[in-house]
Structures are given as structure tokens and as C-alpha cells.
Length: 579
Image 1 (cartoon, rainbow, N blue to C red):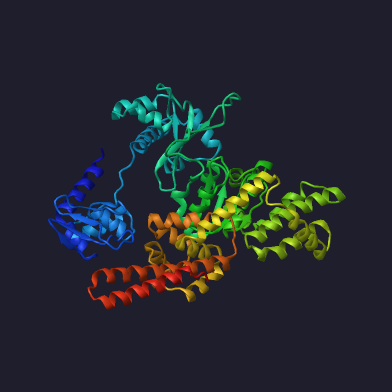
Image 2 (image 1 turned 135 degrees about the vertical axis):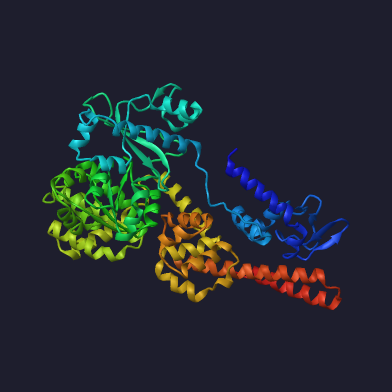
């Protein structure tokens, strides 16, 4: 059990001892004494007869109707629909208790990685300049200063055992990190080590670069994926360079570790690298916290160009501004060795728009002078034309058509007709089973949005920016009881930037924003808006009914009871009306 956990538990116990649950709940509900206990109408479900009990002896509550149960912290958490930590903070303030839960204790695996990394780094810094690893680094123009800044190291194959013995770590910790295989063998041996920190700066894994020409060994080895190390979520250098990305308001996206280090060395510090895997939605979410402008600078071989296309596919639907750089070397690392900062800055400045890259990329795959090849090329262009339409990137279509026209030598009107007709014939999926599955999935997602007020509102706000003014005119903060939406209103009054919202929102709101932002489908916004209005109407009626039920229970006057009952019936009839 960690020291932080023990400390937090003590604070929780102190709060429970200091805050009387009867006094606290009485500030929210109207309590009636029943014997040595107290009772009230349950705030967590509709009822006419009190089934919600408070037991002073145990400082707990229980509802015999819906089963809600807990202590004073649980009550506030449920009543205000906030997280446990937010409830804890609020009650601590109420009780006058200082609560510091900002410090998060590092998992022991991360601490272990840090100790191993220090030893790897120490090894490298204390090797002779004639050692093969330093000769390798010299060829790559990596100085001692860069080694220290990027925490590079060297694995001899004896570091893990040494860290375990000197720091009294359990061997299972080393196994959990993937640095120890079968309980004995070290994962890295005779390799240059590149520590990998996650997007929050925690050291979660390593890459090992082979420094000897050995065709039987892979050039790079990554720590095996585990609880902490997931390549699909990490961008190399992001934790270090995030501030530079924000300052420049764009990010340079590269493929390799040394591409990042070499670009950084020439003062292009707004750079990050993918870890040998495809660019993912999780990567996009992280970048959005800093900027929505991306310049890809992948390798210039076929593999790099395919990766560029894949990244465009992942980004363009999310309203990113994407440019693609072309340069006369195989990768950015080589580029930095042949050219200076000014030359590379010009290359970045002249990067071309992603839809221009799409036109060029496919044109190189087909002989456009051949009629059959041209037909295949235009089919590929039609697929992208349909994608642009589906995600609302209509502003690119005219330029897209004009570029295809120049590339093929065909008139723009002819190209537009071909793209419109062909794209209309493209099925959602080539296989009927996949199509049915995707249709069902689409229907499920739309229902999930339409029947959730917070999701409906966020979906319209995020996916259809021009609806923000409509939402502002139709609704006010008072129309919503959701604490997440109230928080959202507060944040959007300061900035409408998605990155700002993700950085400053609570964990629950941030997760909901990301969930909505990741939705690939673009549903009819008018239908979503109509559902939102109806949901709010019904919510307000239900709230009125609950308020009247409370009055009905409290009043003793028969004529008033009759009048309130009549009002409740009228409101129930309104619930049956579907607008």
C-alpha cells in the first residue's frame, strides 16, 4: 500500500469523523426523524413514500427503494453527479480540512525504468570516445550534449540485475516492464538505448538500436507492449516539445527517433515522431491539445508515402489543417546533415496541401495516358471525393477537382461529373455483411447520441461548428442539469479551442469530449437538434412532476392535494406528446 494512499485514507476518515451526515444531507433534503434514524424522499429515484434512510450511528445512508447506499462522500458524489475526488474536495472545504491530492505517486514500474535509464545513460557517458557506440553516434552527428538532453544510453546486458540488487526491486517488476525475459535474460544487450516517455513525461519504455551490422538481428527493438507502454498512444518527444508546438501553432510529424533528435538539433523543436506504428486517433487527440495544424515529414520512400496517406486519412476528418513536405533526401535525419536550418524552413514553408498530395500520390501509380489506367485513377479520386463530402470538408472539393484536371488534362466540368457519379455508386462497404454490420453500428451510435443530452449537445458543438451560434440562441446553461455541461459552458465562455477544453476540463468531461470527437459518422444535425430539444422538454416536465410530488406529499390540505394531482396528470399527458 502506498504512502499517498495511506495519507488519503486518513483524510477521508477525518472528513467522516468531522462531517455529520445528518447535518450535511439536511442541507440538501428535508429530513424527518424516525426513531433514532432520519428519513426523506429519495433524491435518486421517483417515489411518493420516503424510503431513503440516514443512520447516524454508522454515518451512512440507504434507500430501500432503489438500493442507493454509502457515506457522506458517496451521497454528494451521487447527488451532484460529480467524481469521487471532486466530492472529496468539496466536503473537505466544507469541513475546513486541507486536502492535497495533486501529487500522484509514480507506479513502481516507472520508478524502475527511471533507475535503469540512469544506468544506461551512465554507461554511455563513461565509455571511451573510441567505443563503437560513440563512433556510431558521431556518424549520426549526435553530440554528448544531445545524448544528455535525450537521455540516450548503452545496454551491456547486465543493468537490470544490478538495478534489482542495488534498489531491492522485486524481479516481477522487471518482468512487468518487459526488461527481463524468463526471469533471467535481459531484453537489451549491446544496443544504443533511447528512453521513451509517454505524453505525460513518464518513462514507460525503451528502444534499442543495433550498432553492429548483423543481418540476423532487427535494427530496432522496442520494449514489449505492457500496461504502461502502448505505441498507439505515445508520440516520441511530445512531452518535451509540447510547449514549442503550442508556441509555433503547428507540429512536424516524423517517423523515427533520430529524425526527431536531428530536427530538434537544428532548432525545429515543434517535432514529434510515431513509434514505428500507424498514426492513430489517440495520437490525434494528443496533438489537438497543442495544435490542429500538422506538417507530415515522413520518409520519402514508398513506405513513408503510404504512412503519409494513412495519417491524412486519420486527421482530415477531424478538421486538422494538414500539409505534406517533400524534400530531396530519404528522411529528415539525412536532410539535416546535408542542409541547414534556413533550407529546411523553406521546405516546410512550401509544403503542399494534403488533397494535392493525394492527387499526386495516386497519379504516380497509374499511366494516365492509358484509358483503363485513367479510369482506375479516377475511381481512387472518387473515393476521396466521397470522403471529403461525408466529413463536410466541402471547401477542398473545387481545388481537388482543379488539381485532378491539371494532372489528367481533362476539363474541370468533366472531372466533377465523373467524381460525382462514381462516388455516388461507391458502397459503404464492398462486402454486404460488413455493410450491414456498419449500418447497425451507425444506427446504434446515432441513438446513443440522440438519447443522451450531453452527447447531443457536444456532438453538434464539435462536429458542426456553425451550429454553435444556433445552440447559443436555443439554449442557456439553466436548461441543463448535467454538471458536465455546466463545466463545458464555463470553459467555452473562456475559449472555443478544443485543445484548451481538453487541457482544462475534468477527467470525465475530457473523456466525453474525446469520445464524441472520435465519432466518425456525420448524422443529420437537424435531427440531433430536434432530439436535444425534445429531451430537454421532457427532462423539464419530469423535474416539474417530481417537484409537485414533493409538494403533494408535504401538504395536508385536501383541495390543494386535488389541485396538485390535476397538475401532475396534465404534465404526464404532455410527456406522451411527441413534437
